[in-house]
Amino acid sequence: MIVEVPRSETWDRVFEAENGVPCRVNRAVYSTVLEWSRPGDSVLEVGPGEGACAVAIAQTGRDVHVADISEEAIHKTLSLARSKAVHVDAVLADGQVLPYTQDFFSMVYSQGLVEHFPEPEQLVSEMARVTKPGGYVLIDVPQLYSLQHVYKLPQIETGSWPFGWERSYSPEQLIELMQHFGLRPVDAYAWGILPPIPQGMKPHIAKANGEKGLAKQIMSTTLQMVRENNTTPIKAPLAQYTLNNIGILGRKS
Image (cartoon, rainbow, N blue to C red):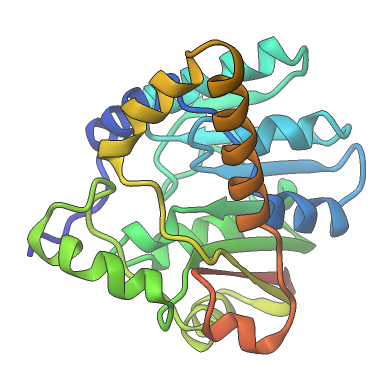
C-alpha cells in the first residue's frame, strides 16, 4: 500500500472528473460554521474542493477565504463564486504552510482533508495558528467504525480508491489530535449513512442530468434528496460511532 501526502496533480484529476455532476453543500459543515460564527467574521476553508460550502457561507455575509493546493479546485471555487455574485478570497497554497499571519481568522474549517495526511500534525497546527484566540477550528473526517470504512478499506489497501490514501478517525482520536494544538472541543456531530458515489458512476449521472423532461427531473430530484439528507448533522453521541463522518469543533485557547 502506497502512503503519501496529497499532491496537487491527484486532486486536479479528481475535480476534473467531477465535471457535470451537481456540487452540493455539506449541510453538517455549513450549519456548524453558521452556528458558531457571525456575519462579518473572517472564515477560512482549507481544501474547499469545488467551493460549494465556501460560496454558500459567503452568501450569508461572512468574509470567506479558501486555500487549496489544487489549481483546479481554486478555479472551480472562484467560478462558482462569480456565478453566485459573491466574493471569495482564494489562494493556491499548501495547507501545511498557510500564507496568513497568526491569529487571523475567527473560524477555520476543513472537510475531506485531514484524513489524507499520514502525519496531520503540521496541517492541524497551521489551522490552529491562523485562528484567533477564542476562535474555532472545525475538522470533518471519515469515522473509523462506520460501514463506509469497511467498504473503502480494501480499495485503499490496493490503491484503487479514487481519492488516494486516507485514514478514518474515532471521535477520541480526532479530539486528541485537536487538543494537542490547544483546541478544546465544544461541539460535535456525525453525518452520512450512504457510501460515496463511485467514480465510475459519475459520467452516467452527468449524462442523466443532461437528459430532458421527466428523466432529468427524476434524477435531479433523487440526487438532491439523497445528498442533502445524507449530510444532515446528527448530534446524538451514538451517531459518532455509526455514521460515515464526524465533525469536531474546537475552541482555541
